[in-house]
Length: 155
Image (cartoon, rainbow, N blue to C red; front, side):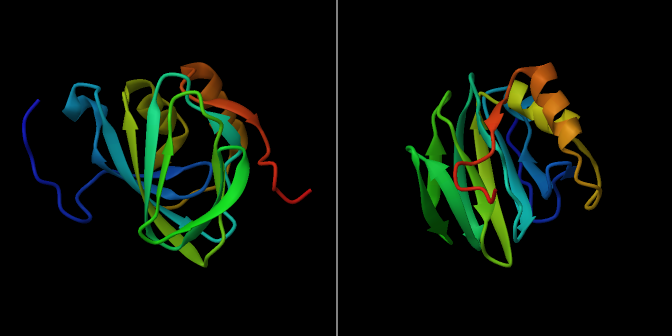
């Protein structure tokens, strides 16, 4: 490992097939697998399924916008400057309720979860939403366990 500085726009950008663009600020390769961090740019309506990470903790800091999140068993809103912490094994998910949102996502340890995101993404800043690819990446890596739709998802 070595120290480095990465400015805005200097991270690798990946289109995540669940929706959104990840700009990697710190990869597991750069941290010896201990931590990974990316900025995620999202549009209104972007939703995750209810899921958990069996081996990693996840910290989300909301840079812009607002999310409706499932955490601690119920829905709650979190906006700019808000923090979400999901310890390993804790079910969670969110939907973007503002026009757009930017979040900073930090995962530790990061190696398996980063492998999931890489397998479920392609280089670039746009692409098609492909939940089958996301589901296959979750199953292949074991880093993310998809439990189903969010309890407050539209039916």
